[in-house]
Amino acid sequence: MCLAIPGQILNLQGDDEITRMARVSFDGIVKEISLAYVPEARTGDYVLVHAGFAIQTIDEAEAERTLKILREMGELDEETGGPGATDA
Image (cartoon, rainbow, N blue to C red):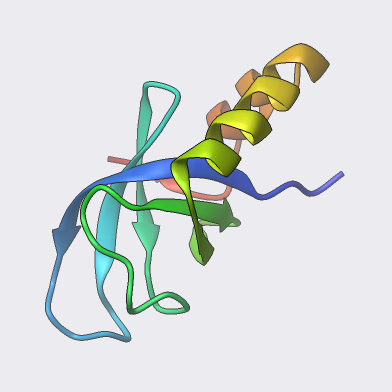
């Protein structure tokens, strides 16, 4: 199953909206993620990430609800530790 995982942007890398990257924390696991699809994203924002790309910005409450559900399902470790994004 493919899931989009919520994470918080720690910092931005680059100025070009198409190639801009970010270091994103997923419940303590940090990965480098493309922001090509969410050029409006800023440091501190929460984003949904799929296959190494942030695909949507979300609020903190939604991120926490989603993380809680994923933890309960046992999916969080598998998704954040698996392939799809490079380790930062």
